Image (cartoon, rainbow, N blue to C red; front, side, top):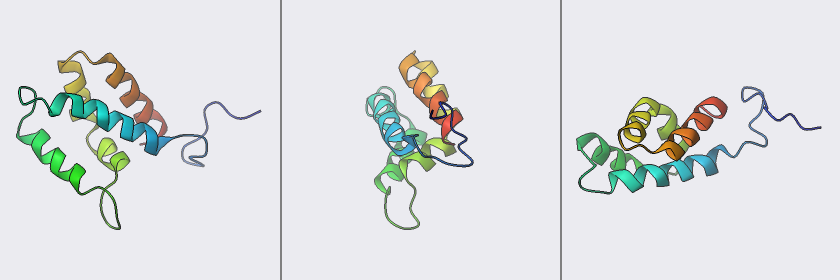
Length: 95
């Protein structure tokens, strides 16, 4: 029987951290792509997203894990419970 809560420090097997982080980025973009909801911080975050991929460059998961508190604040500010739930899952399982 597979462990329903795999130890992320032993193995990421069975945890779709990359896919979930991409989904979360999509949820973030729903907010920050709206000119009424963005600010200097989120514009800089968009710049970091543009650099994703390749060697020595951040990936979506690293960005999510680095900015958990800012992302949580964004979702709370706009009442995005789905985003908060996925963020909590990622933080617990992948960060």
